[in-house]
Length: 192
Image 1 (tube, rainbow, N blue to C red):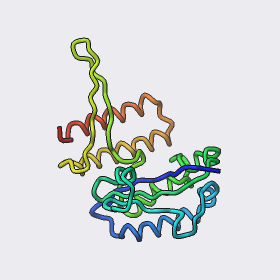
Image 2: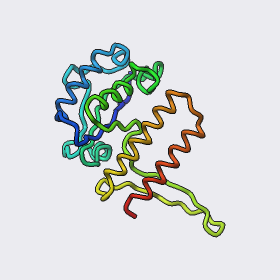
Image 3: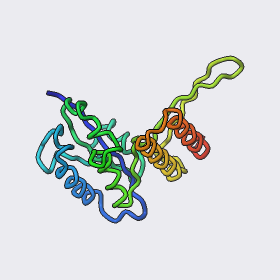
Image 4: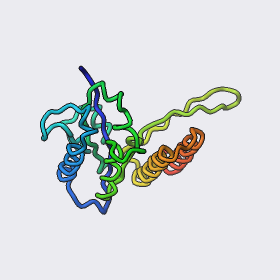
């Protein structure tokens, strides 16, 4: 039975006290003590079932480095069997207190981390009509943008809005308005 990897993304703040390795060990304890999360998770032993990908790790593949390209970012990764879809809410739902993502959100709060429920900000494409012609604008958030701290703060706030939207059953229209607001705020501060 094959499967796939799932991850949760964080960024350190000035208040974060523990090293990434210490945070990894603490997060492992949370995951390994949660029978529901473990129910579809592949087991490679205590040391390797939850892994750390962090900014600056040259041993990561290029596609992995892209996920932690912003300074002070890292993510914890797990491998799950295809059967995880049968209980997808155990891994993806912020409405459950015992889900993988809810554990990550609380972990971030307890350790003064930004939790990115939507992954890291990277890029998007927008269509605009100019003189009756369709034009496509490609926006890319660069990890070395001079305003990356502000961009991460906006992205974090957007992600938390999406978590609340899920928890309180808000409409797709409301969720879309959160993205529009975050996108416009990011565009206003990012380097052109």
